[in-house]
Image 1 (cartoon, rainbow, N blue to C red):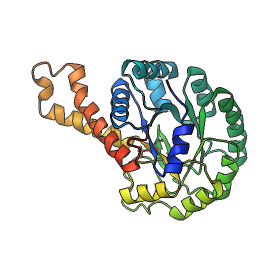
Image 2 (cartoon, rainbow, N blue to C red; image 1 turned 135 degrees about the vertical axis):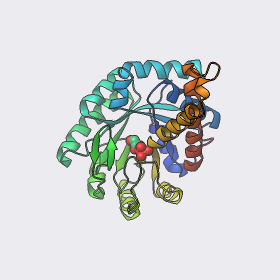
Image 3 (cartoon, helix red, strand yellow; image 1 turned 45 degrees about the vertical axis):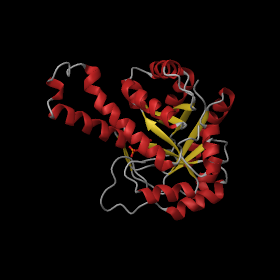
Image 4 (cartoon, helix red, strand yellow; image 1 turned 90 degrees about the vertical axis):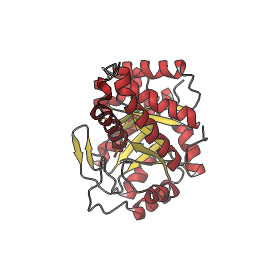
Length: 287
Ligand code: 13P
C-alpha cells in the first residue's frame, strides 16, 4: 500500500536522519529502488516529474505499476509515490490518479499567488490524506527543461508557507539540480538555520542531492533536512553501466541483446547508488 510521506518524514526529522526521494523513469528504475529500500529496511519516496509521468504514458500508469510492484515484490517498507515539482494542474491530476504525495512548485509565482494556490492544495490533500510539499525560492539548474536561478529563500516567506499546513517544505539554499559548477559557493547553512528556527517541526527538503559533498549533507540533516531528492546521480550511474556493458561488447554475446540483459547492469548500478545514499542519509533500518 502506498502511504503519505507525513509519518516517515516526521519520524526522520525527530530522529535526525533523512528519507531519500529517488526519481523514477521506467519499470527497471522503480524495481531497483523498491528492491533496495526493502533490502535495507528503509522508507523511501518515489519521485515522478511531470516529464517522467508523461514518458510513462501518464500518472495512472505510474500508480498501476507501483502498486502492482508493492504487491508482487512483497514490499513492506513505507513507500510514498510523490509528484516532483508539480504545476497546480499536475497536482490535481496526481491526486485523481492515486498518488500518495504531491509537490506544488509555486516558487516561480509571486509569494501571494504561491500562498493562494498552496492553500487550495492543503485543503485537498487533508481531505484525501496525502502529503504536500511546497517550495519557496526556486532551485537552480535544469528540471524538465526549466532552468531555475538557484535562489536563497526568504526565511519569513518560508514561515508563511509552512504555516498554511503543508507537510514538508523545500527551500532554496543555494542548491541546484544536476552537477554543481566548479565555482559553486556551497549551501547557505545560515539561511537553513534561520528557516529551521522559524518553522519548528516542519520537515525540510533538500533538492539537488546529486554532487553535494557528504559533510554538507550531514550538516543539512543536523539542521532539519528530513528529505533529500536524488535524480541525476541515478541517471549517471545507469548510463555509465549501460555504456560499459555495450563497449565491452557484452550485448553482442550469447543472448546479450535481450533487453532484460541489456538493462540489467544499469539497474544494478542504480541499486548501488540508492544504497550509498540511504546509508549516508541514515534511513537504513528506519522502516
Ligand atoms: P538532482 O538531479 O541534482 O539529484 O536533484 C534531484 C531533485 O532535486 C529532484 O527534485
